[in-house]
Length: 573
Image (tube, rainbow, N blue to C red):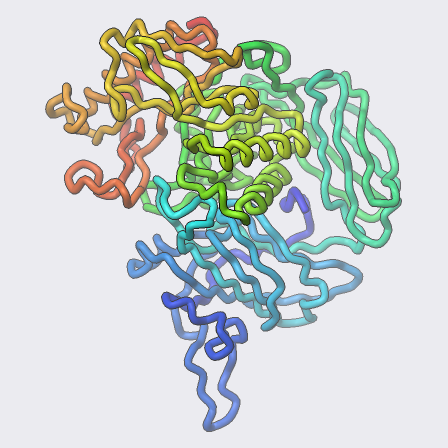
């Protein structure tokens, strides 16, 4: 089920009662926290209780809410009562925007499902489990890192756990509009391609798609499977662009249901080494963003959080953002779309993934399907990224190949890439080597010359060589600096602002020589928490590569990048 905000729904956000379960004992028959047992007789007792204990806000990570949970990685049990006034002839679903990392969901003492993956939405139908009057929803959340997880055991960000995004009770008719895809053909901007699909007993129904502002209506019917395939002439419209992020109110009607949302229309494709938005060559001026509010050391989870991050990106002069290294909240994608920011969305297939694990492909496919299903109608989303900094092997190459083809089968209206850091330097020549670039629509390279790699002797003359005839995005580049620190500016180990400025100056000089460069994404917008960054003086558990400090203070490099973006008007510059 997509577009939850367009449904009849009841928010289950707010304070939830919790049991902290460090030994992960609550699922066993003896403890059985999910049963929420109460003593009945004089000699009865129960060695657990939700009442009288801690409470946590949902949505929100648990690490930032209780000091004793700051670095906690195990299970938390959440409980939330809710009431149903009438069931009538409706169906009921519990929808989670995300729980990190594994979730078990119980309703009125009965397990209704489980989910793995910390950044994508999931839901369970509970029509047969809800009852008139009081209901009890219990969720076990476990953020323990595991070898066969996505991401795996090690990653360069903070492992915020818990019910980190919204929870809602959704009501639908017996047969409802489960899914729809309404986007322009990338080969012909005057054609809408897509589908509408129904779920329920009445599969064959009349369907109408309306755009009132354009006096547009298209009628069709679903087939015996509940699906109607769309190919609709669509000429009179304003295309979505960063300068004019036009969205239309779109209504999808069936005989039993209606859903409305705002949709933008645009095309995005490549032609040789050019990226074309609505047929015109563009240069992507972006920045990397983690879904974190550093000032309060927590996961970003509400509109004001997303607005702060995206406002910073706009102030920097960006026309696009790379949301790393996992799918961010749907609300952030929609806000970026309204603000005219193009979006790169990414799966958390990060570095140490065990591609050879026999169950890994199934997990990767599920996360990809969940990400695309949620955001496939967002005009702002122009790039699906399959991975970040993975290393060539038979298992990795076959996995990414399969993911690429699945992505194109699910959605052929966007570009597909992966961010690689495999390159080779010989003197002043830099070779883009990862052979998976043959498959990807756009090449994406993470490179940290001046930080993790020494500068070649004549850095302004570095020649980047590609045999793939595709556009290149530098998806990451930069270095670390502590705000206000200007000691020993010629040494990287000083974490000096001036050293970081020098990195960016030399990078910008090098970019002039790359004829196929079509996008830049400094790493990154703001300093973020990463416990592996252990320098006791300069890092203190933070990755210091932000253009902003963890308090939102602008480092010297911010002004340099903003000025560069302001004057960067064409791919040739």
